[in-house]
Amino acid sequence: MDLETILANEPVIRLISFFGVLVVMALWEVAAPRRARSATRLVRWTNNFAIVILSTLVLRAIFPIAAVALAVLAQERGWGLINHLMNHPINQGSVPNIFILILSILVLDLAIYLQHVMFHAVPALWRLHRMHHTDLDFDVTTGARFHPVEIALSMGIKLAVVAALGPPVIAVLAFEILLNATAMFNHSNVRIAPVIDSVLRLFIVTPDMHRVHHSILPRETNSNFGFNLPWWDRLLGTYIAQPSAGHLDMTLGIDQFRSPRDLWLDRMLVQPFIGAVGAYPIKSETEDR
Image (tube, rainbow, N blue to C red):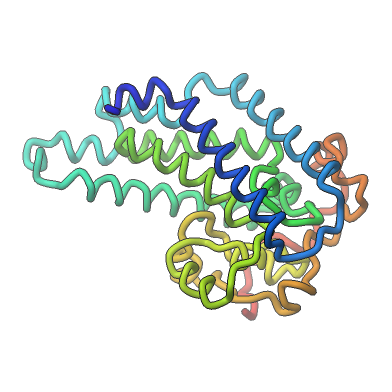
């Protein structure tokens, strides 16, 4: 299958990938759950998927172009750092395509990591992002549970990065599929043997690693920001190996919006606009880790 065919079928490819990973992780959660649920799947899944649908409609309404389509346009018009460098006569054919592909995915992943940190550091952005953290359980649907306004801002940032970087089209498509799949994987309530987890988290963010990020304790909430790759947290000092209370006894969520009623769509949508910002935004002073 050539690139043109892949791009023509991008929505189908992404949809198949989404539902494929969702089904696999959901079945894994049933077969080998890591923690007992505190709320019924019916309430959580219905409302979590409802906000996914709403966010998708918002994106369609606001943005006339998606990241992959913008990468095509950037390639055609020579926009972005990579396109500029690769089109320079000195560099044409001198850099292997696989190197550019890997480098592009790494830079895109670093951008997502930095964006995530920013949404924890700026109080106004935390108000939007905290809806993701108010889920009282942690499973495959949590990975897609973001406020529509945050989704719109995230898309704007992603488009700006793609335009500035000018990555190969196939790199953007691969990253989009990878980000979607790993977000569902590392939010899943699945049991992985500790020895296997310790190896996996050298290369990919595992559920046990990311679950720390959903702890009610601000120090742990402001750690383990990575979605795909675990290296940024280790390199930039935001890595915490395990929650202080242990995975089975840790409390998930934040100290606000702890009623089961807050899991409903109408309540989720207004969470950014009510209540105090709380103690979760990253402080400017160094925290003990």
